[in-house]
Image (cartoon, helix red, strand yellow):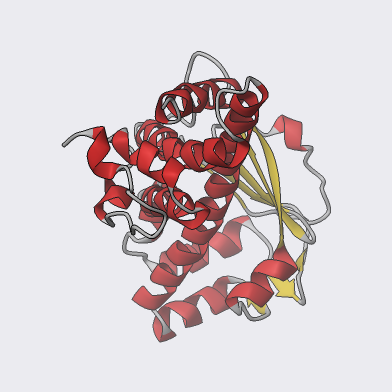
Length: 266
């Protein structure tokens, strides 16, 4: 196939849906995105952000079988009950729930007794009183717990040993799927915002250099950023979060800008 095959003869032409799935691998798809409406370019990014959110280590871990009785016993032995009520989180005691592995450092700390800078790891997630703080190499992101509750209909709850056992008995696999879906949505939304910021930076650079009209550059850069999502997802699957040489905040916009310059070079 040639690039010309994806150049629409007029503004009414609808691009092939296959270009959405080919975007990270097939550069002519970037040129097609540059020529079409913004939702088409955004769809290319949304699809690949969603794919790698589903494949992220934390989400895959959630799908593994759970021994609910052991989980409940271990929770009671290590942490005090956690209460989610009207968009706020409380811990009924001094023992904070803290989980850490090679990929994730997860802490429930509503009273901010542990400074964020003392927590290490490629992906640090801390539950504060009213927000979720996620810290990675390229920056820190904040998500309102109340907004998540309202958006996804998460009820108020108390998490402790007996509650965990009841969850396991009543819901079983559906609980695992729900937690995986909840975490996947968080990962996807944060990755989409990050990729969107990178794409906007690249588009502004090219527009400032007068290499392409602003909206054309933005459409192309959103499609090109699907390739950096693919790169970041593959690195995350092998235990990395971003490029090892330097911060993704520098590298990814540069890669997107190069791809966008090619895609808009007519």
